[in-house]
Image (cartoon, rainbow, N blue to C red; front, top):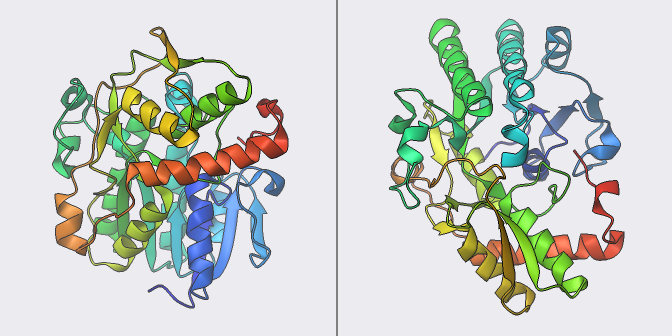
Length: 336
């Protein structure tokens, strides 16, 4: 258990980072938090975090400043969202390499003990993801390299940069490839939301407006696996404290189609079966993707417990409560 350490969390205003900070604070750690967003737009706010900075970590001067007198760094920062965002903002996504590179340089200079990089399943070779149902992606499936254009290349390049700082300078590195993390306290509208949050929102909105149809990007047959955010944080902390330094999957192997996930949310919401307006011209990403968890089970002797059905129930309730409080004019309230 990580206790009584001075920890820097970069991208602290984001979805996963907010849940991570909560766990780290519970264990008595001192947190320095940074994000490019103004603090009022962070997904979670912790009064106990007194050292916070709304600053651009693509600037190495800022990286050098916030890594002084720090034991551990968690780099959770990236410019990303759902498929609609990453397919149309590749240059923005790629610029996150500057955050990782400048942080690594600053950690080396300031003698930080250990560094965590949040990578993604988008780093995997896309030619292995052309069928609807695939075998779970193993860590070695990232090579030969052919990741998701833009965002995936940024993640794969940054993984290599981490590796070389470990090999050349002795900086301790941990890298997790996250597979579609979802749950409460994240964006659910505005273009950066992922499928579980977007579909919960659409079904809630259809229910409130007494409509029997929702828009679905693609034909609904594309598949993914989704991991609840609390499980992601647990896996991340276990990995960070381990001796394993190569990239490793943190994800679920419960592969479902978008249509199947819609059916789950329909049951949770209590609505009758909805009609679907399949939008075949919308961004869809790869045809199928799921996590192979053999390595993490072997290395960490750990596996997630939360089923997709149970995680969606928690997520649906949170989004429903948010929408009830804020009304259906969601763009006004969405944090980006």
